[in-house]
Length: 136
Figure 1 (cartoon, rainbow, N blue to C red):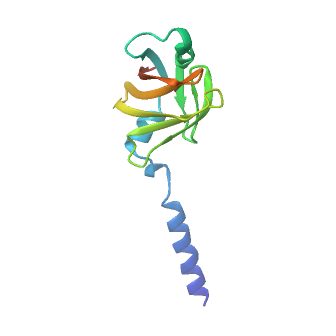
Figure 2 (cartoon, rainbow, N blue to C red):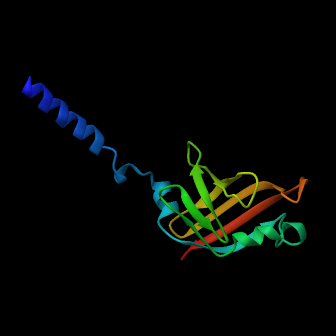
Figure 3 (cartoon, rainbow, N blue to C red):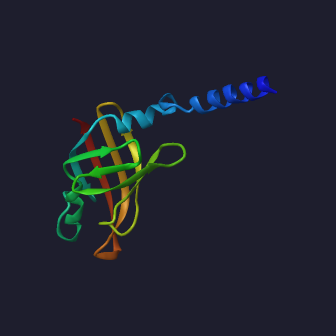
């Protein structure tokens, strides 16, 4: 009986210790390792202006923390990958709806994301948004 309990404890330890940081995907590591500095933010191909000026607040540094929290320029909130890690969803209390972005480029030095977003000030108005970042 003691051997069975000991074997069960060893098995449980091995199963639990198998879920380590080494289980992080390459894309997760690429996204969460650097601080990203914005290079450009475009709405419909031009710098955000008018009622789209809120997008400029994404300028500056972005940090995707491993715990799913982050800072995105002036915003703070949560982020998550979709199942196949081709999209990032950003949720912040400042913008009323989640922002679901497509990852165009993700390397150790470059991040480019695109999305179509509705204007919080005029929900019937949308824009195609492109953001590029470089590792700091």
